[in-house]
Image 1 (cartoon, rainbow, N blue to C red):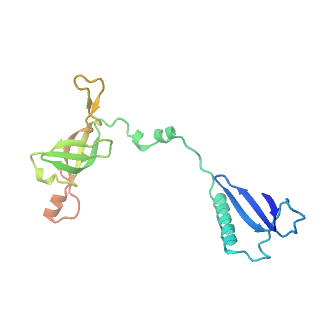
Image 2 (cartoon, rainbow, N blue to C red):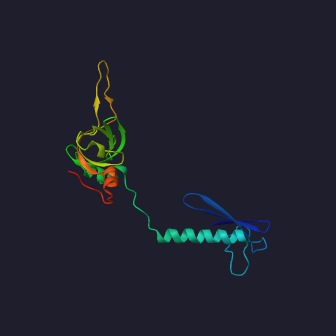
Image 3 (cartoon, rainbow, N blue to C red):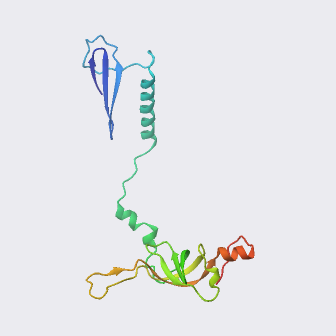
Length: 187
């Protein structure tokens, strides 16, 4: 800490890792010791509101730095390698549960947690149970449908996945009709 005495005040410059702070304290010297480091005794004199809050802030930051050990810096590649997404492996052929979030005619738009949703046709049998908010089982065929159109140099994505609808897990329509509150499994 460097102290600079000028006109009865000492300025204490403290460099912290992320930002610098400046505190103004009253010098106890008569100016003869100007330019020397001073420790201001806080016990003997009464501090103003700003000085109290300033010291309280320093105490809490010092306590935080002592209590919290430095965390290791982990690279993005390491985080991705150890993530649950990579642990899934190849999703082709996996059976997952999705939620119907939109219906247009007989097309069911189903979100199953990957990049793109899938679009499946409403089945003829028990089709009225497939409503918005229903949980369905799906088998993943492709996560992204893309193809090269005639005369194009690039592949175009259709912004949807290719899945096969296997059945109903839970339907809000069935639970309302039967009066049951527990989800019903239909296989």
